[in-house]
Length: 260
Ligand SMILES: [Zn+2]
Ligand SMILES: [Zn+2]
Image: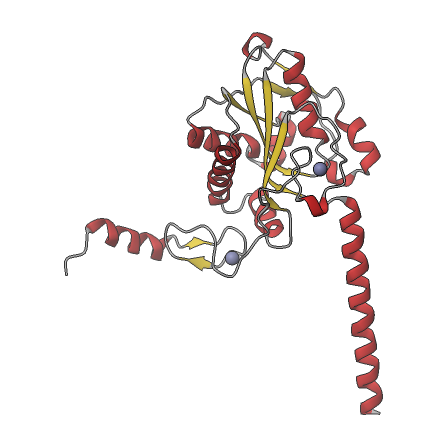
């Protein structure tokens, strides 16, 4: 049997530069992104279009936002988190390709039609701290997948503390007035797909959408790779963890008694 030289090339490439699962880092076969053991929670068609979360986690009460709709590929669960954090720290860049592909598939499924791709911007300082421009990298790959131009006119005026370090009530204040649009004429009457990697409260995306709408954008569809559980859910998880710990302690105590 004659094997195509391209297959040999892939075998050699696989050996020299093994492809890894974007979530857990396990070596996987060439061309794949996720191993068979990683099963992140995909957000289905029943998701709330105001907060992107599945109906059972939604507590937004359909609060109106500046973006017209929002969608997320995954829940930011224990499978997704390590992969995203690894990529953010400068790890496997194939995560950006994977994010772009999955987000593009979701945008098409949801019927988000737009004229350009925008992304949540970062300041120069934030970019140099990380060593690369994360959101731009994801958005430019996403724009290619969607065959749309990349819009780079959204600018962040000054540094802020990361949103995840802030309480819910402070998040809106933390991002208010920190974004602007470089050339307003480029925004008017255009529809945008606005990209970010993770949505926590959604305030950052909303503030960017507000700027685009202020300059007469026709529509803004927000798209993220993963949506974080709402705070309440976090508390519930913590409660579960505490009861698990108590259970373990009880088991250890009873084992101890048996030994004595
Ligand atoms: Zn994996
Ligand atoms: Zn909701």
